[in-house]
Image (tube, rainbow, N blue to C red; front, side, top):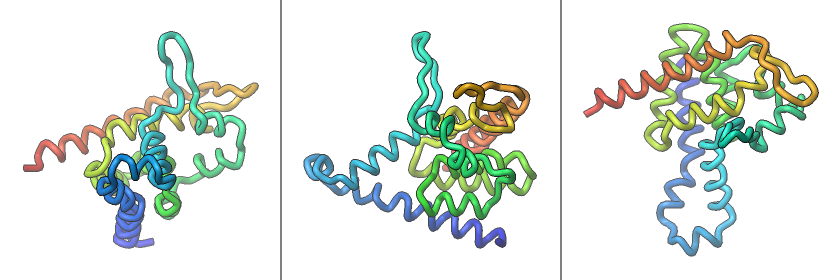
Length: 188
């Protein structure tokens, strides 16, 4: 795929994914409560901001997505391919699996300076609609612990064996957020 084909496909996926948001804004609160499709969109948005693995008040929480990653080898093969690609990212966006697509973008960011620029531009598009700093951090904490590059699953629990790679991916998230914030600060 060419650079511009990837960018245009990413943008089309974004438009499709968020067309329901505009429709939601036009609905009254009673109509929203009665409409199952709208509730699915609300749940989808909540999921974007939910950390997959979280520690609160000395209690360890694992959400449904992270639990599925532990037990479902097929899901792990989708989320953690041998090679992260732009076409794979586009496919996830088209399927409205935005959080998984963001995980791909985090991994693509680490590959090359060209990828870094494309990832930041893609994230900037989302930032117009979502709080991308929170969504990126949520994505990281949903997918990092089950990542085969970082660890493995032993007795149904994630075990970290490469903390340096975990730190590299966290640093990528921090850099992406930094670049997005810098861009927003420059924007009039």
